[in-house]
Length: 169
Image (cartoon, rainbow, N blue to C red; front, side):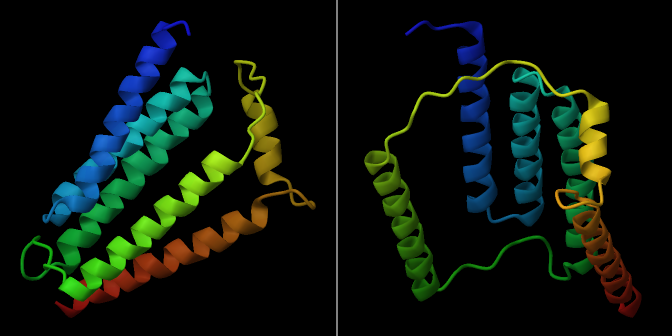
């Protein structure tokens, strides 16, 4: 196995994403969890850029790392009344969460060990942005216009709900 610079960068990004994700779900402070989520999203964008998917990397940085994380932080600050400390879980909930995580890990390991993966051929490069734009805005059978509209209505409902909660205070 040849160790290349791409492999080293991927390993560093994977370690960064893994550590940030573990810290995001184990920290007791909610704002720190949002910050660690931001780090995970930055690492994911780094992997996209490494694969030469610059459009997806830019979308990851602008929409997820920029917009969604800011939305989370504002939501936390507007709705948190007793500080940004998370509550301690009861032992029964912790045990249920641990059991669900162990079951998920067992299923993943079973699939990984029993499935025979075929080698894939991957060509570096990306689709032109025009092709991506046409695919996203197509209204036919394989188009994505309807999901975009549904998501926009959902985000509008979330914004109105956040404004209503903030106005009551």
